[in-house]
Length: 93
Image (cartoon, rainbow, N blue to C red; front, side):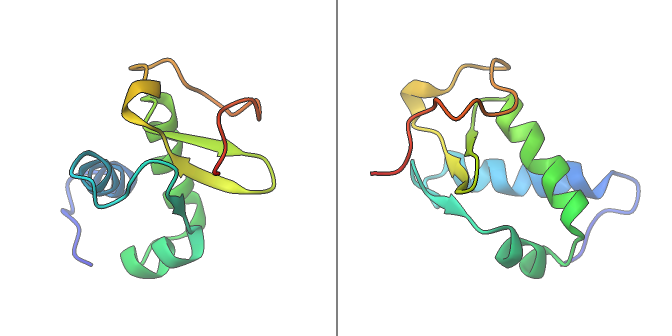
C-alpha cells in the first residue's frame, strides 16, 4: 500500500480504518485482526496499534482484554471520550 511520504503512516492508516468504520465496511462489533491489517497495510504492529489507539480515543473502537479490538456501535461513540479499555464495554454477542 502506498503512503504519502510527508505524513505519518499511522495517521494515514487511522484515516483508512476510520473511513471503513464510517461507511459501514466494518460493522459494529466487528473484530479487527491486527495480523490481517498489518499485512494489508504493510506496516509494523506498533504503527497499527498507534492508529487503533487514536480510533479508541475517538470512540470508534473498544478493546476487550484477551479478545481484541472491536468497532463501536454508533450510539456508543463519544467523541474523544474513550481511552484504554476497562473491559466493561459491551462485547460481541
